[in-house]
Image (cartoon, rainbow, N blue to C red; front, side):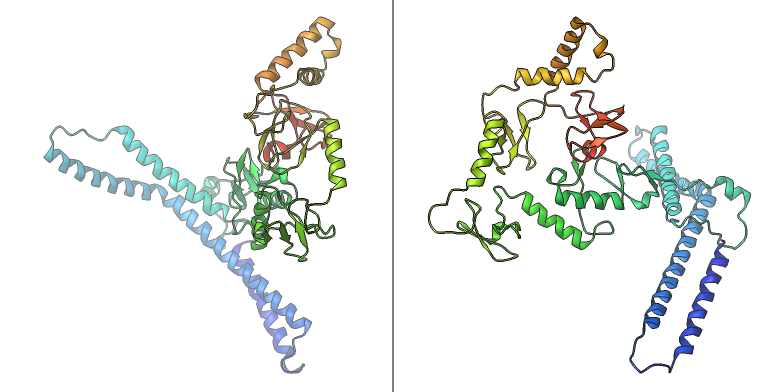
Length: 429
């Protein structure tokens, strides 16, 4: 639909609303607002918004056409003015110093390149403002063949999370230069409030800024700030009332007593049970959990006191709270002399990686042992892998980070061979 027809349709709808409004006058008590009145006002508001949107899009495309059609003339005039200014500057400099050097061709080329790049960026930005999927004509007439041939198709970029394509203005760029659509970025942020392994929201190991604006509502930003305070607090205290379990900020803690900001129940900051007088009573349930951890070789984080189980890799543990410690003794990392890994665990991991090869079962015993030894040495070399690159591996696999099963494919680090789903690859590692 061309611009004139669309604007005419909107004007006719506005006239119909005005006639309907006039026909209803005097048929209800003064000051009474009916459902039809609310519907009428909502419809008028929608029409006004659409009219403003069409006008803005027409203006943007008109500017884009003017810039593109007159761009060469503007560029030549601008370069002529710049050259004249440079000539005057050079003449003054030459009068003062006859040995002064002339501007190089490279410097001139850089100025031309910057002008071209700025102009192209302006045109692309104006074009991308047409998000409605329609092409409008400012004159109501069909566009010329010259404009049609010169007009570039609207630029779209891919969201790294959902793989859908969007106009550039509908995407937010993470610090690592990956693009996220609004739905995926908000979803990642909300997920990070429930799953500490995703907090703070990040991509490729770089934190994504969470600020109030067109991407995040004030409510979501407030929830993020509250969670940041909670997750940054060492040895956290939660309300001892099981039906509440609200986090108690440090500001609500006085001495050994924490007052819940939600239900006002008092909790002991040492045993995490109900507030009491004197020595903390024994916590039978916690002691049983710690005994089970000792039997299974689990380790407790020195900072947040959470239990950690090592599935693969060396003894260097990075907890959800960002604390780094030794899995053997539980002390802060690099403050002990414990070994970096356990040989039996290392061999089992190397054997599991070697078994991923379809041809591994067909090898003779000597070749299989050599392959396992190769993977063992590779694990030693990459025991603190930063996962710089990832390879695609087809088939049904389990993510070794979140334990989810992916039916079609998974990503594998070619350095340490850890396998991860898309969410873990970009937002957890």
